[in-house]
Amino acid sequence: MKYEDYVNLKYEPKETDLICEFFVEPLGISLKEAAGGVAAESSIGTWTETTTTKPYVEESAAKVFEINGNNIKIAYPIELFESGNMSNILSSIAGNVFGMKDLKNLRLNDIHFPAELIQSFRGPKYGIQGVRKLLKIPKRPLVGTIVKPKLGLKTEDHVKVAYSAWVGGCDLVKDDENLSNQKFNPFEERLVRTLEFRDRAERETGEKKVYLINISAKTDEMIRRAQLVQDHDGRYAMIDVLTVGWSALQTLRDRNFNLVLHAHRAGHASFTKNSKHGISMKVIAKIVRIVGFDQLHVGAGVGKMFETKKEVVENCNALRKKMNGIKPVFPVASGGLHPTLVPELLKIFGTDVIIQSGGGIHGNPLGTTAGTKAMRQAIDSSLKNIPLNEYAKTHKELRVALDKWSLE
Ligand code: CAP
Ligand code: MG
Image (cartoon, rainbow, N blue to C red):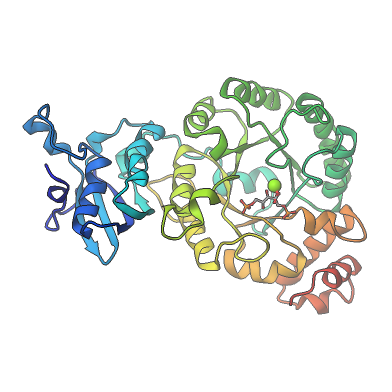
């Protein structure tokens, strides 16, 4: 089969097919050849016909069944993939094709997994409802912070920052993506001491508090750390999902720890930011959900990161819309967030969101506890439809935050 032979615009996808939506920009070849090339190289073909093929192999060919300008849809027969093996699936559909010389650009914009394949993965253990139940917060947006400075703080100071945030009203306190087991703040000591302060904060506030310790490491070590967290009655673990890799995530999820799994996406923009080439964040969100994480960073639409509001809403849909019985995942808004942005955030996300703010809490001139109070006040006033400036007349922490971070 030549590349063009992989195009069949009359083909009607089967329920069991996996469908990919690509943006394709050819370089020196026709769009049809480029589209067929993507289908070929991501299924059974290569650049030339081979003497080794057999007639039955052609039945497994992927087919381009729609071409709409530069946007194409490809159907992949389910037989091409090993169930329950995300690395295998991605090596096909998101593998060699990105490097083809005859393509100027190629972007995997969306993916639709057939139910049978979805069900071969675990999916989230807790999801939005499970997290809400654990925290005993049925409706309001959750508030989280990241201990800052992101690296360098000694354990004794890290613990104080976490405690100050919890008593101010944070539900979640998390490590930063690049904190793991450095000499200045070793993993085990940090785990034990931070959880002691979590318990103290719970006693003092009467609220449930959780600590998202970053367990990202070599897979066996990551599993060991997850076990330690569970043994110490930690309820959560955070993982840098893209740098540890899909098979490590599946291995962790298969252990079925009683831990809510928080997915940080450090590094995603190296392939999600270019709107013509790479893989969209929506695709990553679907994969993280299917593999089985309970919450995921999806951008914020405001703040310091690049994503548009529209993209963020699409990412949220990928996490929250119905998907063959797979639980909805909590979207995490993060990156340059502060109380002034809360009304806009709630418009973008609705109330099923974790608003996570590092600089916007610890940067409050009155300190971390006040910074957290300001964030909770911004949420309360937004939920009551009271303008922030009005609410700030009787809430000094919010006033100070609004003065520091006003909208341009
Ligand atoms: C935010 C953050 C998060 C980013 C991740 C940081 O800190 O801790 O890792 O939000 O990006 O290190 O930048 P600030 P994203 O609140 O101080 O900005 O959520 O887009 O994946
Ligand atoms: Mg961070």
